[in-house]
Image (tube, rainbow, N blue to C red; front, top):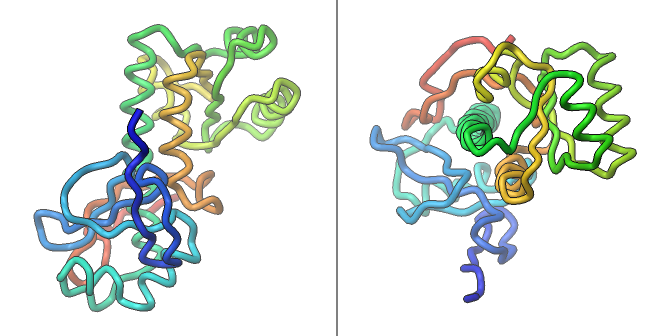
Length: 214
C-alpha cells in the first residue's frame, strides 16, 4: 500500500498523516468550516488538540492560509463546529453499521456482547444515568474495549433505528476503527459534552447558530 499522505499542522508544525488532522476550509458562504473525514479541497490542517487550535487562531494561520477575513474567530465556536461535524459523521457511520447488522443496543444485548468479547467500541449517551454509564465503563475496562460518550439517548437511538438508547455497541472492527478515527478529532476535553446544532462559522468568526447547548 502507498504511504499515507502527510500534512503539517498549522499550530505546532508537526508533520502527521492527513487522516489524523482536522482540515479547516472555506465554506461556500465564505467562512470557516471543518472536515473531520478527509476531503481534497484547499484547506489548512491542524492537530485536533486545543493547544494547536489556540495557537493557529492566535497567529491568524487560518486567515493567512485560506485567504479569508476572520476578524473575531473564537475557539469555543470552532470547537462547537468540530463537535457538530464529528457527531454527524458518527451518526452516519452508526446507520451504516446498523444496516450491516454490526451494532447492538439494549441493556441485555450490550452486556452480552461485552461479556462475550464481541464489542469493538462502546458509545454511551451524554444524558444516560450515572449508574448505567458506570456499569458499562466497568465492563469496558474489564474487556479492554474503547468507550466514548457522545450524542443524547434520543440521537443514539435514532442513529441505530430505534427508541432512545443509553448505550450501543459496535461489533465490527472496521466500523469501530472508522468511528474511533472520527471521535479522535474531537478535542479530548469536549468529547463528552452535549453536541449542539452548528453551522459554518461566519466571516466574522461567530457560529451562524445561537441555539443553546443545554
